[in-house]
Length: 209
Image (cartoon, rainbow, N blue to C red; front, side):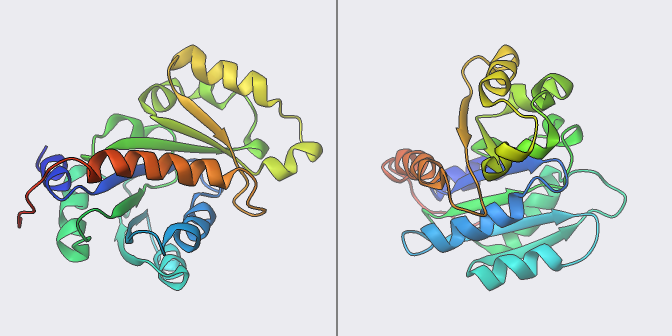
């Protein structure tokens, strides 16, 4: 609640980005930073069990980043994010991506104070992911189906996956994208702009923590 209040006071759009390992969320964030970074400030909290590799990739793409290593932990929690916010100090009216540890189970159960959860799956994982991990998809505000450039080479039907996702979350928005080729990413950028606009147009008084 403290995280959510501070982020709202600063009109910062905080998105908790979750996925299985290898779904492509870091690649998607790299493309997003390069595609939207000229429009608005972007900062990233990177969650991994070990290494600084993803934070280094994010900084190379042009955004400020803080790495949070969870050790044996399989998810970020609100206290980790609170401390990362102190270190990162994102600008008012910016976009904050919280790239969670690669896991579709534990992150579904922990509220970090974010505006919305964004679940990334890839076509290489299979179309039944929403049925296997219903709590994650039920908590999502947006589902991104990544690596659609590989659909000709795998057994994956988009409409079937849409149906599975909406069977556990009827109102969820779903966008097919390819972080590698750029297919569909304009719709993802538009979604971010829309959500950011709602916050930016609200009256707020920036406060320090």
